[in-house]
Amino acid sequence: MSDLLERLRTRGWRLTAQRRVVAEVLEGDHVHLTADEVHARAAQRLPEISRATVYNTLGELVNLGEVIEVSTDHRAKRYDPNAHRPHHHLLCARCGAIRDVHPVGNPLADLPESERFGFSVSEVELTYRGICPDCTA
Image (cartoon, rainbow, N blue to C red; front, top):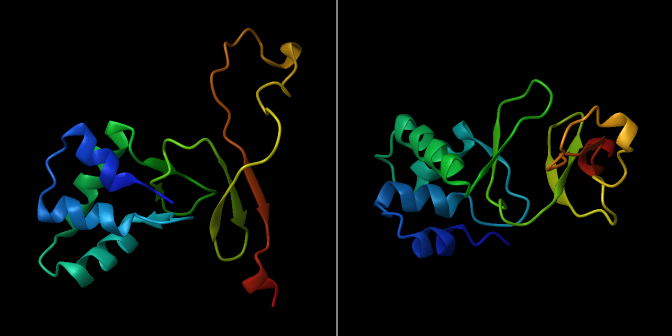
């Protein structure tokens, strides 16, 4: 479960009503919403929130390192609040559903030295693709 609100409070980030509602919308497991989805959900709770405020808040959260911007294929960017828990993603190739996954092993160690081309590799992003149960049904 995301602990985004608690992390923001600990950082002393000013939680206006608009920022709070954006953070609340991002709370939960396997949350990977587009900016438009965040705005739609936030507007249900706070009707006066503007699309620009949502986009600006998401940008601030990404810059703070509290939310990860996830780009998959040629779909809209998604926002993942689980920025402090190492994980990878499982993506449905049909509907775009995303789930956080925690495979066993170290993918960084799986890249042979001969394939690093002198790079000092610091992180790995893996995306597993398949078809989700809803799309298979």
